[in-house]
Image 1: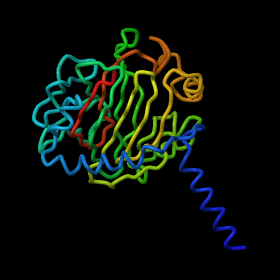
Image 2 (image 1 turned 135 degrees about the vertical axis):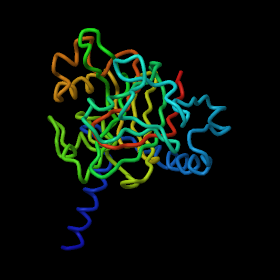
Image 3 (image 1 turned 45 degrees about the vertical axis):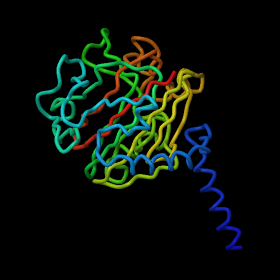
Image 4 (image 1 turned 60 degrees about the vertical axis):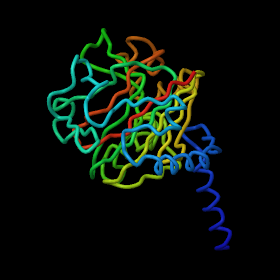
Length: 272
C-alpha cells in the first residue's frame, strides 16, 4: 500500500511539472536549452560581450557593461542620476524608495519579435522584473505598462504568495499575475541567473530560466485574454491604449521595486 501511495505522489509531481496556468508547457526543448545555456557559460569568459557564434546569429548587446548607452529613465529623456549604478560589468538598482528612488529604466529602442537574454542577481528578499512590450502612455503620462517576467526571491518576498486569480503567478520566472512558472531552477541568492524571453512573429511567447522553459502562451489569443480578465490588468487604466499586453511593439524595462538587483549580459536578437 505504501508503494502505491508513493507512486501516486511521484505521478502527481510529474503532472504538475508539465503545466503552466491551465495550459501544458511543452518541455521538449529543455534538454537543448540546457546544453545551450552551459555552452554559453563556457563561451562567456568576459561578461557583456558577444561570442563569434552569437555575432553570426545576429545577437546585439543592449548593455556594454560600462555605460548607460541605449537606456534611459522611463518617461524621461536621460538615464537616472541616482539609484542605478554601473560597476564591475553590471547595472544595479539599489535599495530605495520603490520607483521614487531611481525609477524604472527602459531601452531606447522598441521591439516586436525577439529573443532577449538577461543575467540577473538578486539580494535576499528582493523584488524586480523584466518587462517587455512596454508602452509609455500619453493617456496616462505617469505610468508605464508591459508584460512582466518576474524577478523575485520566492522564499523571502511576500509577493510570491500573492495573486489576483491564479496561484503562484507572481513567482520568479512567471508571467506576473497571469501564469505560474513551472520547472524553475533558480541558482540562488547572490548568484547569477539567466532569464530568456522569446517572442515569435506569430505571438507565441516563452519564458526560460537557466536553460529551462518555465511557461509559454500565445499573446493576444482568447486564452490570453481570459487570463487578463482574471488579473489586475483588467482595470481600465491598463487598457486605455488598447488591450493590455497586445501592443505591436514596445520597450524593454528593468524595474526599480526598491530592492537591490543587478543585471548584465543583456542581449537581443530580432526574430523574423
